[in-house]
Length: 337
Image (cartoon, rainbow, N blue to C red; front, side, top):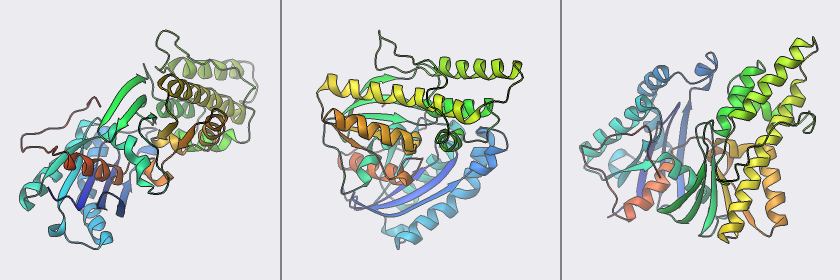
């Protein structure tokens, strides 16, 4: 099957994205239409608005991706689209467009797992790539999971969050502090000016399932601390709370990832997803991994947040393996990797 030029389409949440990849190695275009400003007014993603905005944007985004790649639709060899997990209304927009385009253009179509695509986003940097097997941490607004990645199409789940994802916890703590959405970037910025040790926020180590995560207790602890300070009539030390909260999240992410690498006997770890762009996480993970003789990899920041280049890349490897979808395929809000 010829899959020299693959179009990737991503609409799992609030980013409408399209990308064209050549030979599974070269990103020819990577177009993303963000809805952050629209949803910031509501302090989070409003699913109905997200799906409506995808409908409005998707045709122009795909045309822009093709134009930026310098090709026409007829030159594409195949299409890859996010099938799940995600918001059903959002997923349906991209998936329906991809199915219609594949049928009209008589092109093979493959459905990509959003988490799988994030995992392989680290390979979009042709010069710095992990070696199989490696431990991969997917950490974003909707997902926090650890995997043992044995190959492009082979990953074993080691652990996942029992409640809030790490990025979700950032958003909720930002809301507690009266900070704008999304919470990750602003908390990361303010944390640089605060004390990381002022508030001893809890870490959920979960000894019976050491590779699982839990951030709901940490979020509740921040809320209780803020209320305590408010009741005392003092000003909220926002920078110190941000720094102490961020330190607690990153401490758990780093320690569990390194513990998984030790247990599985691998030399490489990869951190992917939106939270992987966090400056302190990157610095801490690089230092701690080096101290243990491990190599640590992150995607370029443009590929940390939701994008279609990672979908096209993952689709390329699925198509090589002959994995395609029929006309009756559908999306899934929860799709195991």
